[in-house]
Image 1 (cartoon, helix red, strand yellow):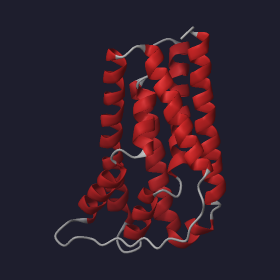
Image 2: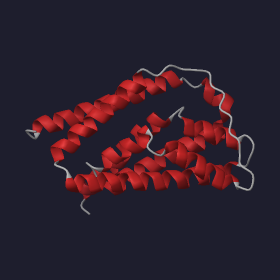
Image 3: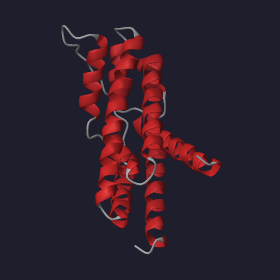
Image 4: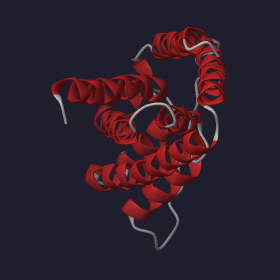
Length: 199
């Protein structure tokens, strides 16, 4: 792999990391990790979450790559732009609410399995998975998978370490604002790419 190609690869992974990390702050998966970690050891919670996110992201990028192979590039780019714009507007409209998320662990399940199942079911088809699929259809799938999985690992570790009380003091409203602006920026870049390529 040439130096420019390697730089492009890491740039794609970095952009994915930033987008997904910002989008996931304060999301339900973080609350699941926090509440489970409050009652159990943190390591199996992190491992369960990371495993779930790794599989979800793999499914997302494979779907995105498969779609890219069948549909014209302009249609994919337009769809990605619309999705990112919708996510951006949704994030900008976010209002902080005081929520008390309770997580009830099922008997007979290990902490790892409980975390895995809860994260997998909660995040399947979520905005971040759709965003990963969208990016996987336009840029290097391995870079997108790595960036997204590292981002979700990062937010899960923060949730376990920080705990519920500390996380509630973070300015989630502004984190969502930044996330929304970033989504809209990516939507704008997709539209610009569409116009530049002549539709």
